[in-house]
Amino acid sequence: MTADEVNKLLRKKGYRLTRQRKVIVDVIFSRKFENCKDIYTEVVSRDSNIGLATVYRTIRQLEDLDVLNRVESIETR
View 1 (cartoon, rainbow, N blue to C red):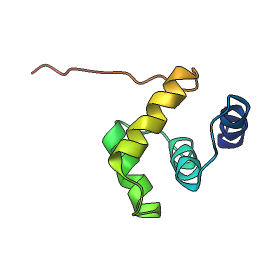
View 2 (cartoon, rainbow, N blue to C red):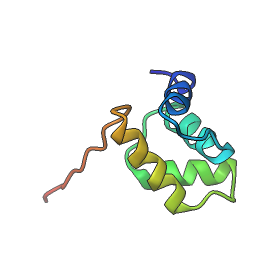
View 3 (tube, helix red, strand yellow):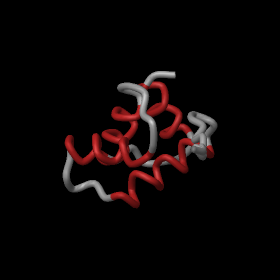
View 4 (cartoon, rainbow, N blue to C red):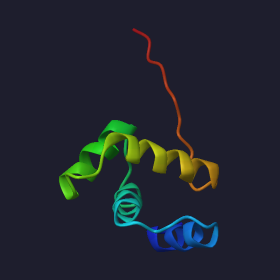
């Protein structure tokens, strides 16, 4: 999926396509990320007014729409 396709899906499902949500989706689909904090760091570099809760909320919405899958990992030594 592309960022544009995700934005269309969000609108179709009744979500408002806010400026913040568009930035977050664009960041997520710009490259691979290791974790949510890295996504947040990139989002803030583009728009410092977007908060951590907004990033996590948008990620959860995208998970609910089966657009992305967050993978939890635990490393052992």
